Length: 73
Image 1: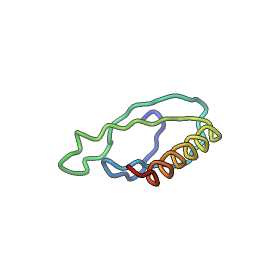
Image 2: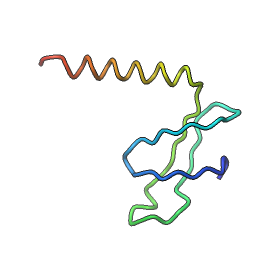
Image 3: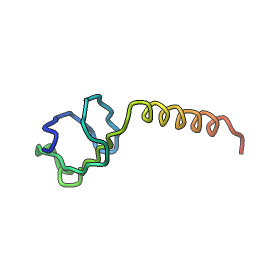
Image 4: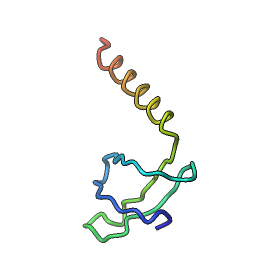
């Protein structure tokens, strides 16, 4: 409710969307629509960061995954 946003999501999957905010940080919320049997178990965590940090995080995670998935045990 603090940001007055609505997006459709699925529990257990990360959802990414772009929006211009005027503050950085972690914000917690909950589903605002009774959407199914596990509705009460759908907390929301929104991390607002600078786009450059977001791109760096994506690159770092991709490189880690790529290197780890190619390594032999």
